[in-house]
Length: 547
Ligand code: GLU
Image (cartoon, rainbow, N blue to C red; front, side, top):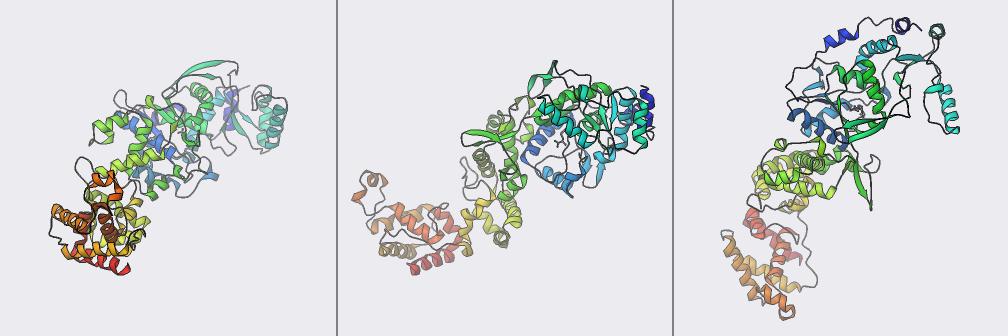
C-alpha cells in the first residue's frame, strides 16, 4: 500500500505540515517546574461540583507553580451543546475563584494557542490525520452502522471482546483501489487508528493521583475522525494538549480506560506524553454504602444549588480544599487569616478512589467561614444573595442598612464568635423577627398560667429603661423574678425543681417570646437595644393584648 498516496487521496485539501504547526504554536517559555494545564469541558450547560474539584486542582497546580491555566471548549459533539453554556461555565468558575489565563472567553479567544474551541480546529486535526495515514498508522473505514452492530452481536454471542480489532478490523488492509471506489461512490467513512497493541500485554504507568498503575495495551482500532471530519475526544486530546503545550492533564478518571490508547496516539504522533492527574469521582454515603453523586438523584451536585442555598464562595472553596487535601484543615486552623491560596496544594494527596462528599461538614466549614466575617461583609454578601433569591428580604435589609448591620454584628468578633449562619438562607429565620412584617405572634407554653406571664410583662414595662446597661437590665429581670416568687438560683432549682414555681430562665423566655416571637434568639438585652424603646414596648404590649 502506498500510504502517501492514500493520505493525499483522503486529505487533498491539507497542505500544511506538522512541522509548520509546531512552529505556529511555539514551546512556552516558563520557569522550570511551571505547570501548564487546562479545563476542557463539553458545553452541556450543567456545571457541577466535579467541575469545581477538577478546576480547583488544575488552577492550584498551574498558579502555584507560576504556570498557566487555560480553558478549551470541547464542542465536538454538536448535539449535546446548549447555547450559552460556555458563558455559564466561565461565570460560574469565576464566581468560585477560578480565573483562566488563556483560552475561550466571553468575547472570543485569548491567547496564541487557539482557536480554543475544538470545532474551529478541524483543519489542525486534519494535518495530523494526514500524517498518520502517510505513516501507515491510520486508515479509512467504510463500515456502515448495520455492519458494525452485526459485528458486535457476533462478538457478544462468541463471548469475545467487542470492538474493531484483529480480524474484525475489516478495512485495515484494503487496497487503494477499493478505497478509491468507495470514495468515488460518495460513501461516508471514518478514520481509524491502526493499533499495534496486544491485549495480552500490560505495562506500567505513573499517575499523579492514582500512583503506579498496571494497564493493558490497546488493540482496538479506535476512531480518530468521525464521518463529518470532526475528531473524537481521544484524537483531539492528543493534538490539542500537545500543541497547546499542556504539561499536566487534569481530568476525571473515567478516561483511564482509554489511556493506553492515548499513550499510543502520543507515540504515533511523535508527541511527548504529558503528566496525568486522574481525579476519582465524588461519592456520598447512601445509607451505609458509598455511591457516586448523581445528576439525577442529588441536587447538591449542581453548583447552582450552592448559590441558591447561599453558601459563600469561600466556604465552598475551603470545603473543596479540605476534601482534596486533608491537611488543609490543620493548615487553616494554624493560619486563620491567610488566603487559602497560600496553602501548598498537592495533587498527590487526593484520594485515588474519589472523595467522599459530606454535606454536614460543608455546613460546618461554612459556619466557621461566616463567623469570621465582619458585619459589613456579611451584610454585603447576604444582601447580594437575597436580591436574587429572596427579594422581599433584600428590601428589608436595604431599607435601613445600619439597622441590618447592627443585627448582623451581634456576637461577631472576639474569640468565640457566634455560628448562627451556615448559609444565607439561615439569615431570615435567625434575624427576621427584627422586622415587624416577619415577627411571629408569641406562642406561650399553655402549661403556664397566663396571669403569671402578664404579670412579668407588665412589671418589665414598668421598669424598662433602654439607657440601662446589660448588668442593670439583668438585675431588673432578676428583681422581677424574685418579686413574683420565682428563683434566680438555678443550682438550687436543678437540685429540687418542685421547690420553685419557676426560674429566671422562664421569666427571660416570656420576655424573649414577647419581643422576638421565638424561644431562641441572640442576647435579649442586645435585641432590645437594637429594636429601641418604642418597638420593644409596643411588641410587649401586643403580646399582652393577645394573651
Ligand atoms: N471534554 C472532556 C470531558 O468533559 C474533557 C476531559 C479532559 O479534561 O481531557 O470529560
